[in-house]
Length: 243
Image (cartoon, rainbow, N blue to C red; front, side, top):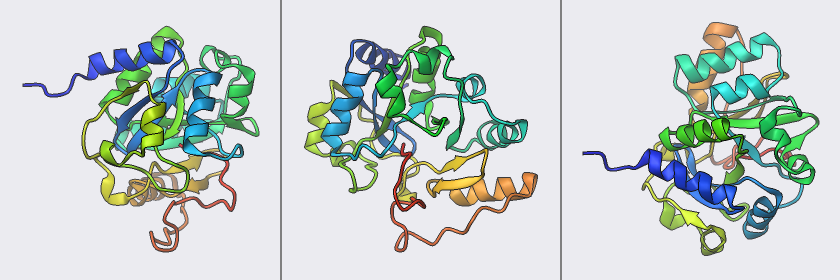
């Protein structure tokens, strides 16, 4: 017996986003909010109480990454190793092709609020629902951008019931799949710039990502100082990219 309607829920999310709405949905690294136009993303920003210096991430998959990101082959090989060989979640930052149909479908102001210095973060491999959403978005040229479903500064939410009322009220659709897979990490996705190899955020599966990059690419990522020292995982004094 199948308990989750992955295909149906992905279709519902895409339909709401296409109509200009906001959805809250589950990923393996916590609940997230998603929109596909300037009005929806601005509404979600305001509900979160989020600073304008922060950036949305694109929701995607390995195919979207390969088309949208414009980075050296070594970075692509690292991302492939993490996503395809080791089945790990990642927010990959890199230069992007602004003329690609997905980012170029977003209004200029919304795209500016989702990029930094010519780079774009793509969240991928964070669960079956996000994978199916990304597949539909790719096929239908509907950009999906968003961030974690929480009030700014309150931490990632791993149960739908922990998502605050302001975020719930903002959403046109909310999907509840219960406690999320990587809740023991108490952080969202690990975020790395694969051009500079800067770790922008230490997050879920960080020690596994460290091991893959050390073992196969001789890359030494910095140590995790721990949740007490760095509860959000953000390594920049002013976080500019956030999923």
